[in-house]
Structures are given as C-alpha cells and as structure tokens.
Length: 261
Image (tube, rainbow, N blue to C red; front, side, top):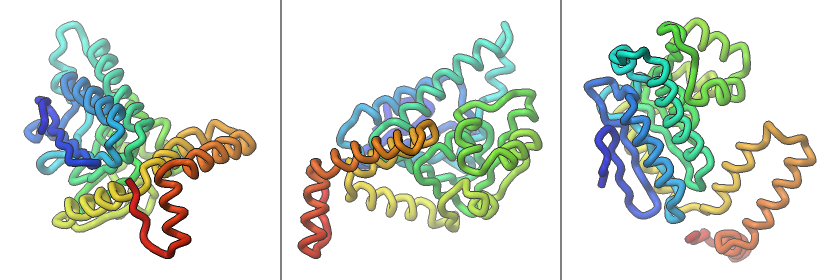
C-alpha cells in the first residue's frame, strides 16, 4: 500500500496503480506531489517485476496541473519554487518514459496544464466521456512544462499544438480522441474496468517486447532510417533470445496461446 501523502501507490504482482490524491485541490501538483511522483516513478522503473503502471486521479479531476495557490504563497516569488517543482515532475516523466513497464493513463476528469502533459505522455491513454483537456498555461502567464512541447507536436502536429498552447482551447474527450491525443473513450462508469482489463492484458503479455516497443518509439524521431533500422535489428534479436521470445515463437508454431513469464 501507499507510503506517500499526496499520491496512493498499490502493487499487485506485475501491476502497479498510482492515484493522484489531492481531490480537494483538484489533484493539483504542489512541491510534495512533484517529489513523490519522482520517487514513485523511480520505484516503478527499478522494479523488474512490473509490466504495467496505471495512473489516475482521485475524485472528479485527473489533475488541474501545477498548484497555483502554492505558487502564489511563495514569499520570495514563485520562480525558484516552480523551477524546482518542474525538475521533480520532469524526473518522473523521464522515468515513466524510460521504464520497461507500460504506463496506462486513466483520465477520469479534467486534465489541465501539467495534468494534461502527464496524461498524454502515457503509452496508452483511456479517457472517460466526461474528461476534458486544456493546456491553460498562458492563461496564468506561464509556459508549458511536463514534456508538452515534446509530445504534442509529435502527436498532433505543430499547428494544432500552437492552437492548444496559445488559445487554451478545451478539448472534450471525443475531440481528444479525434485529434489523436487519447486511444479510447469509454463511459465514466466503465473507465476503471476498462483500464483494469488492459492492465491485465499487458500483465499477461511479453514484457521484453513491450519494453522494446517503448524504447524504439522514444528514439525514432532522433534517428535517420539506417540508425533506426539498426536499433530495430538489435531489439528484435534480443527479444528472440529472451524467454518471452522463445515462448512466443514456440506457441505460434504449436498453434496455442503463449504463456509469457
């Protein structure tokens, strides 16, 4: 069970669940939550038994982003506080992106600012019908963080990214699906069950191959064709040598379902 104050963390076998847990503050990310997100992300990245991490918010919000009240309360100005908060959040984002386990985001409500950034960085994003997405940074006189300027242009292109960041347009869940920001939209009452089903599917899947997919996609935009082809050859060779690879090939030839470790 959780030993944190602003998030809940639970693990059962190959599945971990993280819940942003400041519902009375719309799950806003203050310095403590930023620090705890970095800690829990590092814990997940260091656990070879994990295959999937599901992330959601408590209450009606996924996350309203950075806690503006906490920023305004800084007597010496918000700059140093916000930079430190961003540093912790970015440590978490990097660990989530580079860990072998898949990150599943269950967006149960509004995702704004850094909450938006955190949601779209997941390997699979499932949104409730009531979910909404908005950047909201420039409305508060701030610039984006949480990897938004990295992920958004790659997901939806420069022009749509400019619109979201400069106009603070809000996308409802159906629009987010149409734009390619989320993978699935489900009725609110079915969100938890849908994510549990996906988590179970990934927990029963080939960890080595799924981790390879994450790593290949993460570096693809920085490589030319030949460099990426070389990486693909390295990864598929390693997968073929792994226990999952041997089992997957044998199961295919035997015409049976694979039993991955």
